[in-house]
Image (tube, rainbow, N blue to C red; front, side):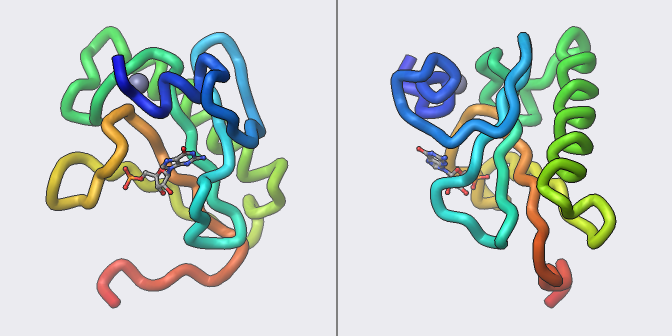
Length: 113
Ligand code: 5GP
Ligand code: ZN
């Protein structure tokens, strides 16, 4: 399968990993939109949030746990951060392997700006 994030999971495409366990990987976004911009992904290929099955929900909990750990380790837990999932065309999703953006390290723009 020609999926860039599966290749990052396998290590055939390099990335700056900040977290890894049996099911989840987190790495710095190649084009950061904030001082802290980490992508948190399941190792399992799931194209988008629309494809998350009931059986995948423990994985989503693990991603949430990893996000909280990353927020603490990257020192944005107290100042604040945003966890974002883009799903589908209107959201601007460009990589079709489920991922959550963890953004922080500065005052982020309002969603309705
Ligand atoms: P999306 O718009 O799909 O939610 O965001 C995809 C994100 O993946 C973008 O922020 C983009 O900069 C990031 N990205 C795309 N290709 C790579 C890559 O090869 N390595 C890393 N680290 N990030 C990538
Ligand atoms: Zn994939």
